[in-house]
Length: 522
View 1: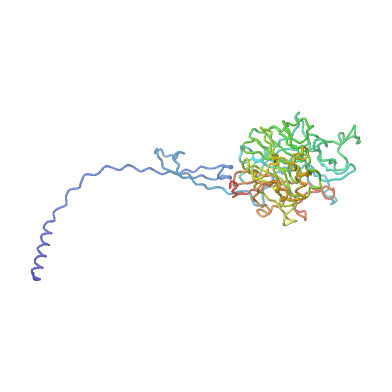
View 2: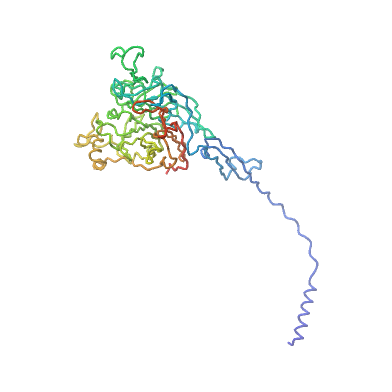
């Protein structure tokens, strides 16, 4: 086909196509309307202080579909939650507990014409969470203001307020970071009369310390009459406590361990004694006896910490330092005993803890589970005067250690009724001095495993000499508290204000520190 023919054919096809194009048809019938969509809702809930996610309060933001179309987001419609938490209002420098002044008439050391305050205060011997109120904690005092003194009747302590009653304080941490005292619970004898902090008699755990007044005279049964060994002896108190460990139970009662006996005493919610545990066979007040070797505790370094397992069946106590078992020749050691007492079976178990430095102090314990615990280990120095001061908290596991009560006896391993487990006639303390931990391990005796959790000197430049209280808020938060000794100190037997620094510019006071971001469940 020539080019002309091709062109005529193309025109014909185009003409045919144009001729086939008709008018548009009518619209079809509309389809049915679709189902309306579900609205999404957002709800903000304010969180109060003490919330388990936002301890200082905050906002919980909830969102989800309005499934029942009522315009309200109900709990079962929430499919997403986020939180905006208020930050901690406790500064790194901590927050001070309130105090009152008991005396301010005594000369401040050797500074003529000056006086100092004896404060109450003194609540730092231990600290424990309130069982049901997440913003409250209990704190314990010891026997009261005292200081080393040697007088006519031998070594002892000056008690500037000898009628002082040891007590438990209930405190609350507020949203603004302040701590307020809610109430005091004064400790009482079974008959309801107030106890003192004066020493016990020798056969019931007395330390052999003579109590003196601020004039250097012995404190007597009758302060208006002269001393007479028979008719007006030195005043002691067999119910007196130098409390150091505190447990608060869900039924409102308390257990307290002390440095005298050591005694472990059960008090009701009003502070009246209802039970007692110690190592003295002749004490008719006790329901459970500690192993006899605990009577060999070192004076003023008794049962410094006390905890209870989460099921509230087993008390766990830690001694402050190496016991004088059998005598003081073993004190320069790093071996410390931990005891557990099942309150139902009355069975005791004993474990060993190895300190980082000899003659350190274990001054607090709190339970994470029935086997894991936080334990305080510290020295007795001030950070401002010693940059190497040690104030640490470790996590330990009891089931990693040897239970001294269950060691199988052999010709060498013998359970002595007065000294506990012995190896070839030596106490565990003696073996640790003579042969070290390696010698104990030869006999299958190993201490608890420990893991550093917090170094308070590194974390907050902890300025105090004593770290003694722990408030376990949850598995990420822990508050700690120092013992300020009622802001009372002594140098060469002379009473004075207790200061944090050598320049004597900062008076020691009970101070709460809050540590967050922990992973205590790992």
